[in-house]
Amino acid sequence: MGASRIDYHGLPAVEMRRRWRLCSGHVADLPDNGYRNMLCIEAARIANPVCLQAGEHWGGLQHLALRR
Image (cartoon, rainbow, N blue to C red; front, side, top):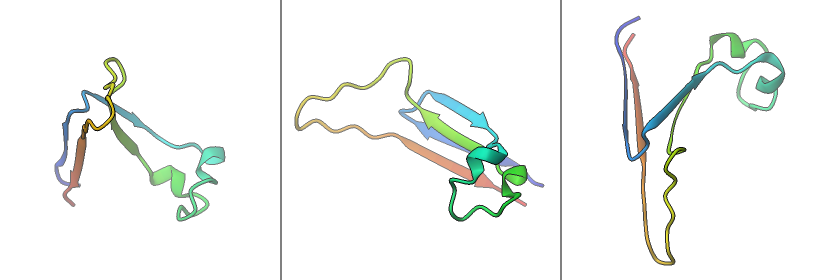
């Protein structure tokens, strides 16, 4: 497998985890044993949440790239 890259903006925390068998049953397009090959990567803003007033906007971006 080639290089992987994770870019994120406005989301300072990244969580990486693997789904386990009982939880993977809730993912409609995941085969029965698909959890064995799945890695969940989620960027988040946890420690310093963004509080918006009416009419304000905020955005965060996560971009994942995998080269085979």
